[in-house]
Image (cartoon, rainbow, N blue to C red):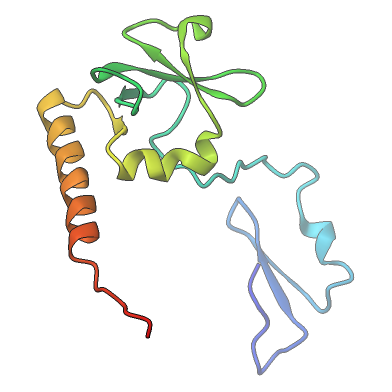
Length: 145
């Protein structure tokens, strides 16, 4: 649907899936042009690669070493990391509130897309730790008198 123009402020143009066009004089009849069932679209803030069955590498702060595995979601929309080739959620690790924590896991080098090489994971983690140390060490001091 297009927004009315200044020269024709009461005319709405609707483009249908088959490419045909229709113009409506006001908004009263415009919903008649909508399909009876709109396709359901899921809006998410997760990166596009976070999806059911995605291959990932996890190295959470409580793990001794990184693991390759698969992301799976249960019927309660909770995300799990299943190590190796396992597809059994009961053996997986629950990723608590992945929607809220995903970006932090990526930024801190705990969650990686695909089967990432372990040397790259360690480089990322070491770089993040170095950045934190540098930030703390070189943070400007403020003195209150």
